[in-house]
Length: 363
Image 1 (spheres, rainbow, N blue to C red):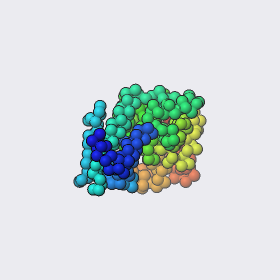
Image 2 (image 1 turned 90 degrees about the vertical axis):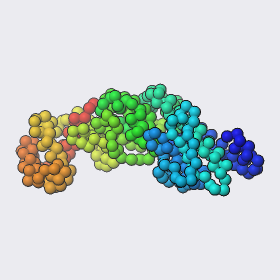
Image 3 (image 1 turned 180 degrees about the vertical axis):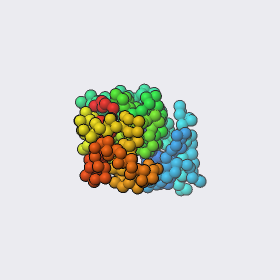
Image 4 (image 1 turned 30 degrees about the vertical axis):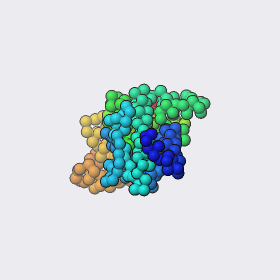
């Protein structure tokens, strides 16, 4: 590093550029950038491509800040990330042909900054970083400076937009920060999990996505609405409401609050209120009989598709068999499932059934 700085300083303008590069990476550390921000900013700084490759994946960006594969292309120069994180991976850049010394300086500063970021994230995981997140979700710090300090301990910035993700399932895997970080991927910043009642919560920053695969050990997952990092409680409450509409038995097992549409209003109904519906009560009795669950699943598929053949295809049944099953379930529930109005009532009751069967919230 010192040799590079001496060579660059002999060039006058190059020396000034070198100091600006050092200041640039210092600023990234000061503002607690993540690995993805580091790589994107480096690519835009050098005007070519840059990337990070680690044991759990990586990220790469071009000179315009667009994502690309994280594997280094031909012509890239790379270095392993040093310090206590020597096995954490490598960073690479594609040097501009006009200034190889500057590319080497940028690569070394990028490596040092990446090491700092990874150490900070590892420290947060070892600390369990639960208390700051618990304080923020419970809205305990009323003073902005205290909230900012809690975010700093989590490695989050106060100007970020975040979402709370809740999951219910096996406590062991859901308590492991590594499983959550693998699920979130390198493009997201994710805290270690905190348990609230029967659910595990993490704070997430990154591109908006609907939940796809479930974290290891999760039976149901809900992603809350986007909120300020300084006030994530609203996102937590919306994730709790969204989780009511998830079901490990009836499905869906994963939902995002932003994708609920008009169901957001229904999610505000409490489990006790949902269980007050007579049709829901009949469904609860039916689902506990030996064949009742299969009949409720058949009714749910039919109500979603509003078409016997489409529902039969989903359930891998012949349409005539499904039609017979629907007549039986209709008779047991006291409704005509083939009448459009009563079918809509049944669809609404099925949503309320999910809410009524949901585990108690801890708001």
